[in-house]
Length: 228
Image (tube, rainbow, N blue to C red; front, side, top):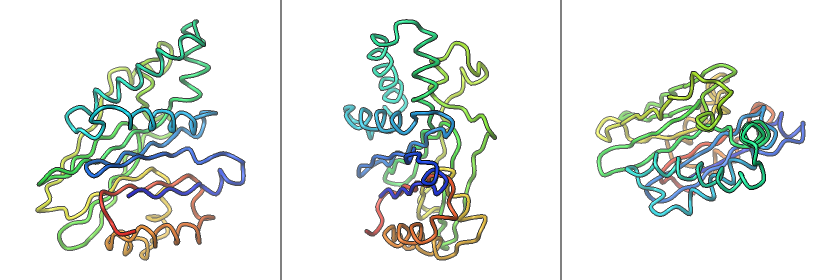
């Protein structure tokens, strides 16, 4: 399941929710658009919808190839409208395609997370205790789209997906989340933790709506399964 809530600062500034997600029985994928990019809400939705159309889009083995293929397809299509490479880079890629990519896959005995950028992995161990694993890069996180940029952030050219494997005998549940979840940790929101343990996403959504002023950034949480 995926829940997503617009950040209150984005609401007051008239900025759309820049997060987006898709899910299947074997995979949940969430995208977190860069707040500084003018149209990252459009970019996450375009990428997510095209990715969901890929054959075996929820295949762990094909995931990274599918990500590259969708980026290639988008930019091949856009070259017609941005024939000058610098124009394509500065006025489309940098304005639309800067977003974190986080995917969680479930196999018979493991959860596998693929991460490119910043965000959180939330784990629940066999005793029911939650842990929040934070991945942060300050004001300049790596984005997959930088691989297509000649001028920007050359240190990220060779950056690859980080892969994390969680054995089901140790970890009962694994969730992924955008960095908008930070207030849950900062303000010690135990009722959200309790709802995550219960897999009750409807209650989490209700709590987020009631406390939306605490969440300045968009917040998206994804989990395989869970109660509606």
